[in-house]
Image (cartoon, rainbow, N blue to C red; front, top):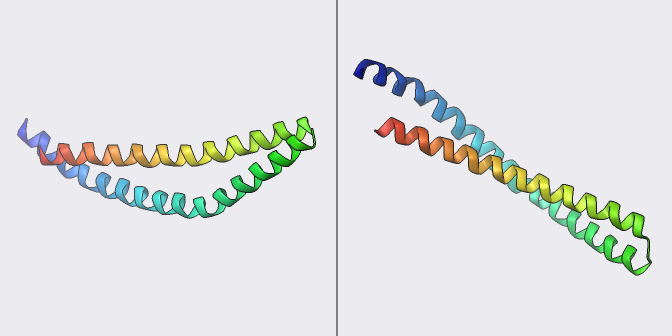
Length: 97
């Protein structure tokens, strides 16, 4: 049983490295995308306020949907990053056990 456990620990090392690299790349990409999506969301919000004042309800709904899509993209990226970090911590805990 110890031999199998040692073999699994050796096989976990490249997986930890791969997940760590993927986590780093996605984290940098998410932070950089915030500089693009943040001002876009602010612009969409301003356009939404304008369409409400002008009573253009169809365009208001479309702008709201675009705003929600931007929010979901950022939330989804954060969820993937946190999930990868959690997997990496669990694999590291298995390695140290």
